[in-house]
Length: 234
Image 1 (tube, one colour):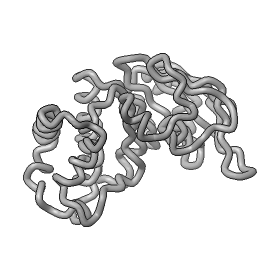
Image 2 (tube, one colour):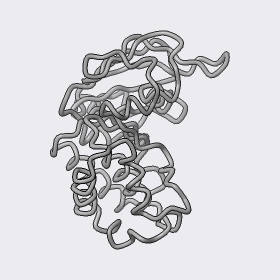
Image 3 (cartoon, rainbow, N blue to C red):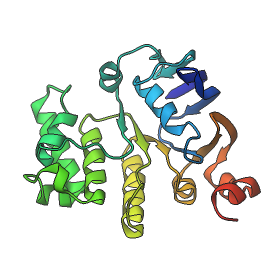
Image 4 (cartoon, rainbow, N blue to C red):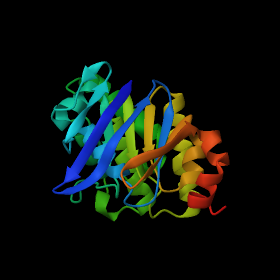
């Protein structure tokens, strides 16, 4: 579904991502793990079209999207939930969700998607007329995920979904990610919480200083001595 071929990304003279290649197959949860500053968010932003690679190619559903504008990538079926949630303050929960369907003109489909989002996140329906900025961190994360799902993505990019959440909410968010995948949406997950991410991932890649240094199944990486020492406190 997604194929990254030798991409490198710079911020000015600083090389944030160096010659990385990986792929995501349809129906998988694939985890990108690594310390803060490893290049994970840069990689997701580049896939989404928010950044341009200095070199390399990004293929999605067999098409080259390396130079496409972000809105065209969303229209193709690839949506991102950004790090830090970034809900729209001053808009209600309902209006935030409607923004997720901005590119979709099928009113009946949008109503169906809204119903599914409310079924998955009942708290959002309870607060649908509330200013999104007044939600708790966990509720804002649910809203950001629901907003992305309103575009009916084939592939969902999740950037640090557990950041700043209480432990019980973290588990709830990861259960929701598994449910999203089971219902047909492929997931690429960027997460500092390596143990949680790898425990639900089909496969994973470990990033360090802009490079991919390890890859394997989720279970293989959980049991890797190198991963345990660096990321799991082993």
